[in-house]
Amino acid sequence: NAGVTQTPKFRVLKTGQSMTLLCAQDMNHEYMYWYRQDPGMGLRLIHYSVGEGTTAKGEVPDGYNVSRLKKQNFLLGLESAAPSQTSVYFCASRRLRNEQYFGPGTRLTVT
Amino acid sequence: SQQGEEDPQALSIQEGENATMNCSYKTSINNLQWYRQNSGRGLVHLILIRSNEREKHSGRLRVTLDTSKKSSSLLITASRAADTASYFCATVSDRDDKIIFGKGTRLHILP
Image 1 (cartoon, one colour):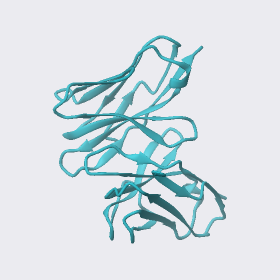
Image 2 (cartoon, rainbow over the protein chains, first blue to last red; image 1 turned 90 degrees about the horizontal axis):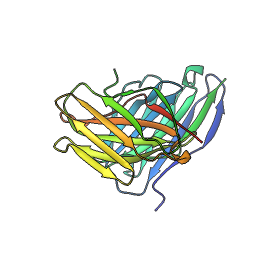
Image 3 (tube, one colour; image 1 turned 120 degrees about the vertical axis):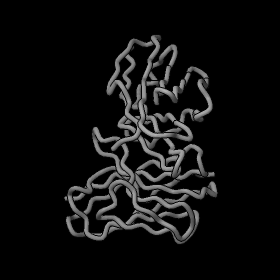
């Protein structure tokens, strides 16, 4: 039981490049989330999903897209990376009204 | 705006002392959760307290919830060096099940 895993762990992008972050969970959770964490800002919700095939915007969705084609996977895409997207990205999953399980994070630097 | 706001932002205490962190929120909740984050790692769930509960214990952790004041506190007794971390509260909305994190309290245990 691996819990929540994230790929990759680190990435450096040039401005304008695109990339996809993968989150996978093996706990059969309905809900999945993508957050970004910046110094002094806590966690900010980017997008989330309440089930396979559904996604919704969070607090800071601009510049990101997501897809949830399979229940266990939640993908976060950056179509044209900007320096402002330099951050640590966390994925999480949970069941309805229960605690969240977090992945180890992806550290992204955009130069 | 953030639903949960932790107080204080930072706290340094001697090993063996008790540490208390507070969380205030604004709207009606289904439950409130506390998480710990060690430097460079993902968040780990500590304890969940539901809106109809007033106090909950888990090992050296004690959480209280006062829904009339819209506040919660996390008490760590007999602190250890390993308790050095950031602690976050998260509220789950009673209306739409959204989960929102505060900015956290950085706890430093001095040897």
